[in-house]
Length: 302
Image 1 (cartoon, rainbow, N blue to C red):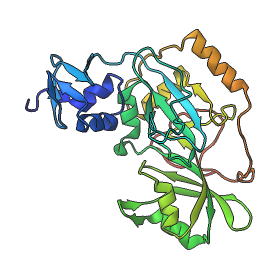
Image 2: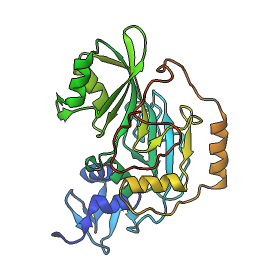
Image 3: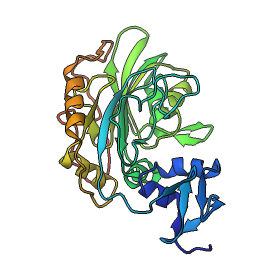
Image 4: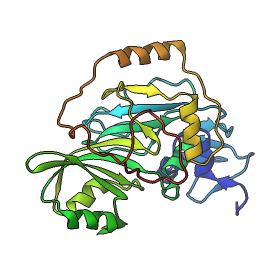
């Protein structure tokens, strides 16, 4: 097919089937066909190509509207759609969609809690996850081990891991007593278990890990663990600006979905303590669910 057309995974992601990375896995697994033949990575398609996934035809039309959810993931849930071991997944509690599917913006491992974003726009998801985007991810982490100024210096200057050099762009003391101490840390990538591996490289054990921010999005205090909230027009527009994409119109949730969201927000979630002391300096502020971008992403210091 040469260089004509667009990459297949990009077309599938834009149709709202998933992120480009997920689409690449589908192609490698033999789930995608082009004009009756099995697709391969590297294939390009034009608007006339007949694309199917698992035998079902896929319309190449671009997603013209979008929805974005913020989910407060508890520990004990996997980030995949289905789990061979039958464990709960982060998709179980999300509202059902008539068209398209929820696409996770990044992942959190089984024992990590905190902020997860979901969208119906594969292009937005891909842009927010792409390494070139340099979008901050902030975590609250409880560490057991000896941590001195030299340790913190190494962690911010860079540590060689098995997949290359990694570092925190900011580390803030969150307080604590005894051998367990809290820190707020910021990374610019989404490598597998990157926060845990960085601390482990310094002979420290991470006993609790929670993502508190993704770019300009924070977890609102009313959204307890296991709950979700739909982002409004202003917040979604801010995400598109962060991803350097043209904002798309917001697709409204159904009345039933709005009632369900309101009901679950009215419930009290699990808010067990063990958190850092109040007043500890954090890399960001929690005044709203979405901060207005101010130039390039950088950790704030107050």
